[in-house]
Length: 364
Image (cartoon, rainbow, N blue to C red; front, side, top):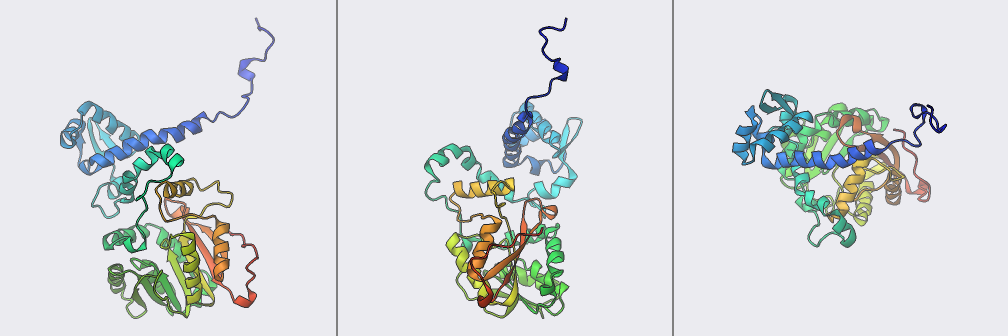
């Protein structure tokens, strides 16, 4: 029998797209994330640098063998561990990133581990705001020499090379003679640009101790005659003048008033028509993406962090107020595991600057 005359179920169109799978993927991120961070916290990946059974690992880290085996199975299912019979080890390709002490160890994961409690208390923070004393350290408490060495190793995984290739194609760079790398850290960006333009002299500007790291790399690459260091605080000290290019590679991240002062100092150190190259995280103008940057933005507000994220348009408006003209926003995500963007701007003459003119759309 055909029933009541209703359409055959096999031919019925779904009334709307089933989004439960998407929601499950978002929600399940909590469970897999907790499993991953628990393993990190217990030292599972460090221990499994060499192959062990679940029982051996449990005895070492003080956990229940049966439950430990299930955790290891999940980590193997996520592709992080290799499982051979009843023995487990970190997969070779993940060893440099997951085992503490390895050259590319993803130390930012420890940072995330320390901040899990903020997300666990998100509802409370949304109602009452961040607790006093949550503010993150400022510029004066930035990364030390050890962290800078780690940043250098990670930069050469693709982000450095991509940045050098993109910027070195700009005609303004090819004709440049002086560059300042603000918060230049290890100095590899300045060194790389000096290699691409043999007429370029570079000053790497950073804090005491950090410039010592840059000096070692400068010596290593034999560019002492054209790449030098300046020790100081770019928020407080003079940047000098007469530069054709200024770099800010994920260094500045202060408040909105601080941004105005910083960009004015950048404009002040540049020659007319000089380039400002900034690597940073920006939000799309409709604030719908990128998702990871939106997460960073929320986290930095719930933790009371001094850093902030702006849209591309808001950044270009800040530039314009300081005498800079934003020209391009280039997506670096193909070369790095986060939605980083490379911003290209120029210093424009006061007599030709229309501060009310809308920013020019990015072509990239």
